[in-house]
Amino acid sequence: KRVVSGSYFKSTVKIWDMETGAVVRTLKIHLNVSSVAISADGKRVVSGSRDNTVKIWDVETGAEVRTLAGHSKSVSSVAISADGKRVVSGSDDKTVKIWDVETGAEVRTLAGHSNIVFSVAISADGKRVVSGSYFKSTVKIWDMETGAVVRTLKIHLNVSSVAISADGKRVVS
Figure 1 (cartoon, helix red, strand yellow):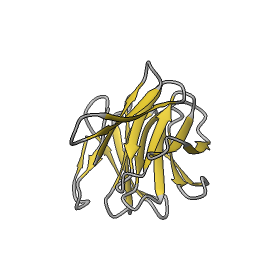
Figure 2 (figure 1 turned 60 degrees about the vertical axis):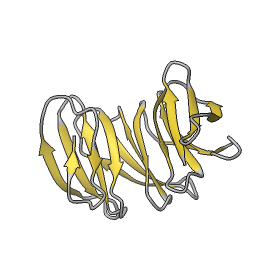
Figure 3 (figure 1 turned 180 degrees about the vertical axis):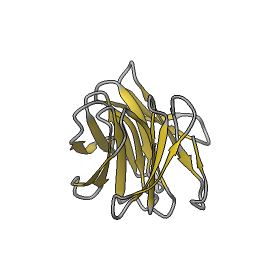
């Protein structure tokens, strides 16, 4: 039972014990951490940063497992699938990337936003990716397997966060 937090200005990630509130580990990592996620099994932490990379960390040892490089601008948001096999990242380069956790390979690039992708989420079943674009105020729902856009929602001004319900039937922004 862990909680993870990232500090943009200190470039650190802290892993907390939910029951005691104690810091289990502090990771001094890459430049300006913008987003963090923790795997469902609590074994991996994923971080995105202003250095254009995504990093995967081992919670137990604090060791960097791998760096995922491929974005041309800052990484704004990261998510990890419930099964721990895929990481999704959203970037200021207007793309969403899907990564294989085991190999570090870029599986697919999802292009279609006309501005910064500020937030990403993955459905519990791993079939859908949701992304939100801040300045153009759009939310896109993608098919994880094919990379096809399932739906584009033009919504309120400045989408700063997206989430998908556990049953995959609702998206909130």
